[in-house]
Length: 114
Length: 109
Image 1 (cartoon, each protein chain N blue to C red):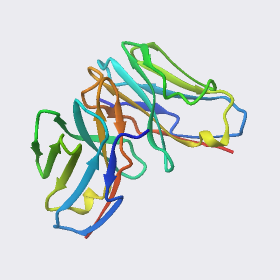
Image 2: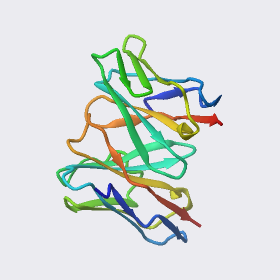
Image 3: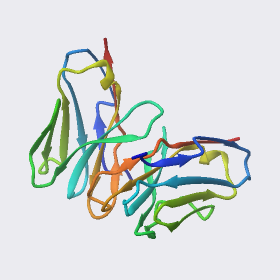
């Protein structure tokens, strides 16, 4: 099992550019989570999908952020336009049955917006 | 707002010693989990304890939960240099987890 796969691992972009982060959850998992981690705010849940349907997007900072899960094996998190304050590590995690079960985290995407 | 707050924020011990870190939370929970994060990596699940359990063991890990005090502790016995990492508690009420601020553990060889 390859685990949760995220791409790219590092992204450096200029303010105003569109950024797309990608995630492939573990096969068979039906819940997917996007998190953002910063020193100031710690690990924050951005959005939670269950069976490809967004269940809770209350953590999405603002309209510049959007997430999709077109099928069970792929999800994207898009930031448009990006701002320097979006710089963070973005993690995708999946689980077999959502909460309260353990989540499997990907390696993260380190985003730097200049 | 963050649910869990770990204490201490940082801990430095010698290899072979025990490491104890604590987590406090604010509202009722269904269960609590502990995760480890090595530098530059994703979080790895360590152990889950349900709200009706008081203690749980897994290898060198011992977790306790006191729902009356809304607190949990993670004990790592006979620590190793490889245990150096950040440790997070995550509490679950309904369908999502709230992660704490983490304890940075450094085990000196």
